Amino acid sequence: MADFLAENNQCGQNILRLVSRGNAILAELLRLSEVIPPVFRQENQHEKLKYADIISDFSYFRNAEYFDNKIESKVELQDLDEEFRENNIEILTRFYQAFSSVHKYIIDLTKFLEDLEEGIYIQHSLESVLINDDGKQLLCEALFLYGVMLLIIDTRIEGIIRERILVSYYRYSAQKAAAGDSNIDDVCKLLRSTGFSNAPGAKRPPNYPESYFNRVHINSDFINMVIGRLRSDDIYNQISAYPLPEHRSTALATQASMLYVILYFEPEILHNQQAKMREIVDKHFPDNWVISVYMGMPVNLLDAWSTYKAASTALNNTLETGNVREQATKYANKVVKLHTPLEKYLKEGVLTEEFVLDNIPKMMNVMRDSNVTLRWLMLHTSTLSPSKCMMRDSNVTLWWLMLHTSALSPSKCMMRDSNVTLWWLMLHTSALSPSKCAMRDSNVTLQWLMLHTSALSPSKCVMRDSNVTLQWLMLHTSAVSPSKCVMRDSNVTLQWLMLHTSALSPSKCVMRDSNVTLQWLMLHTSALSPIKCVMRDSNVTLRWLMLHTSALSPSKCVMRGQQCYSPVAYVAYISSLS
Image (cartoon, rainbow, N blue to C red; front, side, top):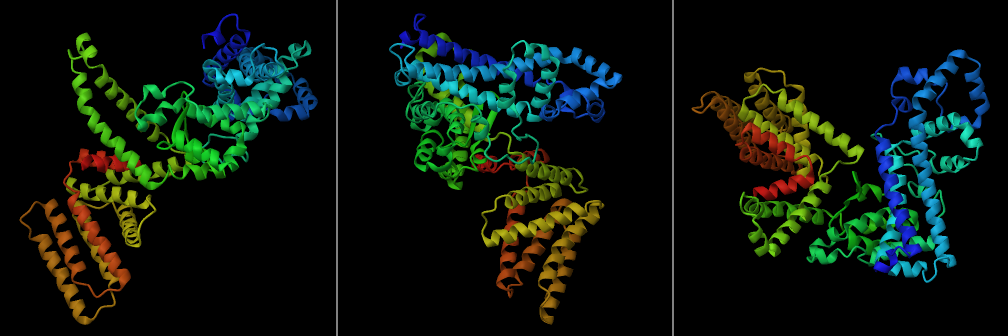
């Protein structure tokens, strides 16, 4: 194993230097993505108009002479162009050197593979390198790093910005190009805009990112052999550090991220090779669907693989509702379970040298379980896709407005907030039975009424809320006989008397009486159609939930509402209560 990386082994040293250079390029790209000159983003309308005649995208190459003549014909444009060049030539050069390094990296990797195939490295071939532990790690990382470079460039530096930077560098560095820097054409072809955008609601371009990854040809045999190693081997020997079967996906997490990126170089597997994709998912993604590709780059496989038939089909087992619920419950329970030993070990004076030496196995198990649990929870409660973020944020805003624009007492706020939370959950968990759908729709109506009639005094709020409930019941049970009308009217009177003659505090009186009235009306108007029966029963269920979830303090009410925004977090929360 050590022989492959020996100083006298040219093959091992070359691939090692190449992978080291790849990591350095990634670091530079991440640094540059944070210092993009605002003028190239053109978010400011004033700057956009000011520099419109001297900053261009790749359309410049179709009519370069006209563009240059326009600048030369006006003295003010010449002065502005010269000022812009002096202010930005240094950062433009850094960007171009980083972009050029990406192109040179993949060219050097391709050359290395050709040398391996032609036998330049005596006693080494592609097959023998992939058998060696160090060799297969380095070859897999070499291809993976190139894919990550392309993803970082496209996600951190948008296509139109890249084009403006490259065109500006081309214009201001014409002397270098004339002196032999002909690489700029290849760099422009590799990094031209893909049409991808991080903007909320932006659609994914067709055949993205596979068409982007294939702009420079790479030996397909090499790609398939690397994928084969990642599918079948534990290339970093991590399973020995995670002996429990349930930790296998964590042990293989690093190469799972590599496999995710490298599969885009061979999209045929994602589209059509269902057996391979099933093997990949069963081994690497049986209990997780959000992965960390690189530092600060989480990916939700549900979104990323949605356009690939074989991949999305293989992932369906992982994304079954039962499996998601099981995983969320399991890790929620582990948080509670691990809290006690962690609290015990972290007390001051416990972790002495003697104690650690005597308890290494126990402490290692706790640390391993804690890391696995924390990793899963951090990944699977991460940012949603832009469309889901918009849906979630709009509901958060709605909930906040209802919570903070109320003229109700704290107890009524609790009752209202529990309904808001319940309404949100029922509205966004679509696999409901017909009765629950009716319950959900009635809550939507109640929510709308509460939202649009909130500017009332406390007494009017009480009257409004009780009348909303009574109005709904009377409106939906209108085809009644005279005797039932008498019964209904008498109950209205009874409800009024009970509401205004209570020996309880006003807030508890309102809650109790409104529920008593609602219960009585629902129970004593049984000659309803099946549809109305469903609506009645759903309201009984709603009354029970409202009655038994109201005894919370305002702070706990807020905490409960916040915890219910994510279905995964909701399952974990309910599990913690039980």
